Length: 244
Length: 334
Ligand SMILES: Nc1ncnc2c1ncn2[C@@H]1O[C@H](COP(=O)(O)OP(=O)(O)O)[C@@H](O)[C@H]1O
Ligand SMILES: [Mg+2]
Image 1 (cartoon, rainbow over the protein chains, first blue to last red):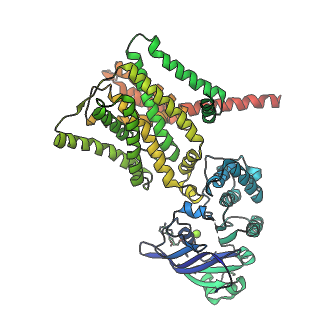
Image 2: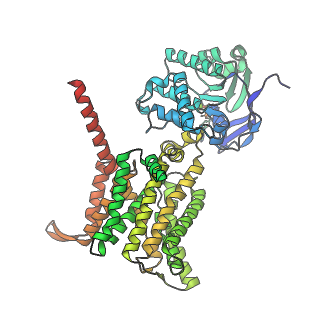
Image 3: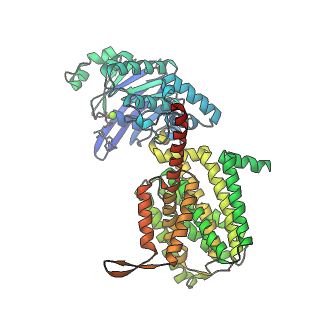
């Protein structure tokens, strides 16, 4: 018996696009309460793995479970209702709704049987938590990129997830914004949400992650604590001279 | 009485709007009493028929962003149901049956097609109408060995009141549904379906149900209008214009609110009816050309759609909102 409790567990997860295997027999565990980093060069299959977990793609082989329950045959909305939320690498919002209405939709639909009154409360709480409350009535497409990304997180959080998957939340942000986002991710974890995050900003990954897994050409090549990963010869080779 | 009051309040959220709807319905209800000719109620019936169809169309397609060309299918199904059962059952029973039947067809077609996105869905629904047309041709040719069917006629007044009741029910139902979680889920789907689904919206369920619900009133309209046809065959029942007109009317009037398709239908129908009656001859490059209805009509449509992407009603709404805003800003400056 392992000494940890898995929220999400993947075993032999495989996804092919035509003849190309984007994710190849990947085993992973997202442990309750941790921040798990998922890194790897561009095209390594990170987003595809997210897509398999959230059922955006149908997994070709292998099994993914959420709290012991198989989810890779369910639809994305069922998975969301079971407590797993995600963000997209390119923000996906509702352009005709202002910020608050975007968040309210998540609160309303994210869990089964949420009443309008509850949804209002969840919306306000979540927006205050992420600091989006100042932008409640802004049209989403008028917002700069960092705010759009923050809204993306806020919407995911408003579904009241148990685990949250973040896809390159910090890409395109300046150092100050990266710092803000890092502390937001920490606060999310401290509020009891388990986090799985794809990130390229090494400083962020190395500082806030409890553990890291590394994908390369769709295969899992390393797994461990940040300092182990940064010393791993295979990882260093993959990132070829990039400072890890 | 309280229930009615509450329903209106929930549907419109305002006394003015509720009042307008009730006043309009009452005014319409009195038209057959005051008009002496038999033509007016029929004319208004056609307008209401198109209002119901374009409202239904925009309820699903306008919100969810799936352009359906299946309206003629549901209309034709309703027509045939009335043609077959018209002599056995009263009209109101057939209206309910036609609505139920169109709903079921909508469920089946929805389950089959709503996995398709964008243009594929549109083409499929277009094909459905063609298919039903051919199917009934085949059926009548080889099985019943008839050509079309005679229909039990009803008078204009009965048709008028049947449509008025259906129209009222449709408007209230649409207003209520628009505000429900279900209506919101459709709006989310229309804006970003993937995002909606990942945030917990059961997209397939919402789409299939909405598509089927939008079919029901159209089926009932088909059953009613059938009685004015005297004789129907597959080409009258599954005429492609019944698919195209509601779409154009909804776009013309604007789909953002329930009133847009109504405004669009009224103006569209009156305009095309007028132009159909009065083909004028005009001179172009020294030649005399009969400008039939559709040329002017097409030109007007194109201009309106290009100039007002939000439709007539949407544009007017925006103008009013702007003016109000300006009116509020002025005192602050002063
Ligand atoms: N929907 C898709 N169809 C075909 N190929 C895809 C699709 N999504 C991703 N891929 C391919 O799979 C590989 C992994 O992509 P991705 O998971 O986006 O990488 P990462 O997120 O690690 O940068 C890439 O070669 C990409 O081109
Ligand atoms: Mg990616």
